[in-house]
Each structure stands twice: as C-alpha cells, then as structure tokens.
Length: 79
Image (tube, rainbow, N blue to C red; front, side):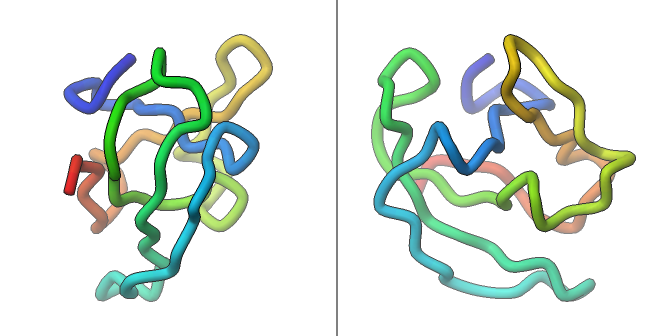
C-alpha cells in the first residue's frame, strides 16, 4: 500500500520525525511524518496515528495498523 491506497499504513511504529501539524474538524490530530522504511512510502506525509482514531476504522496487516481514511475527516497525502 502506498499513498494512493485507501488504507495506508498508520502504525506509529512505522513512522519517524512525527510532528503534530493540525486538528481535523472532528478533533483528530493530524501529523506530518516520514516512514522508517521507504517500502511504505518515500518523503513526508500527513495523516493520523492509528492509536488515536476509532478502532472501527483500523485494520491489521502483517502485525501493523492500517486506517480507512474514507471514514475520517483527514486526508492521507504526501506533502
């Protein structure tokens, strides 16, 4: 899954250089971050941390969390 995937990797353990940059209208924290491993994406992204969103939008793959951004008022994107 990459930046175009509707369920990108959102597990805090996969990220580095995490900085809170904003809040969504519903109150979710929005962060900028980079992935520790470039196989998940290269560059700086914005998104949420899976441990801060409702569990119903979180799925697991390979032991890590993925978030269904179509159910949140936050856009996952490269910035």
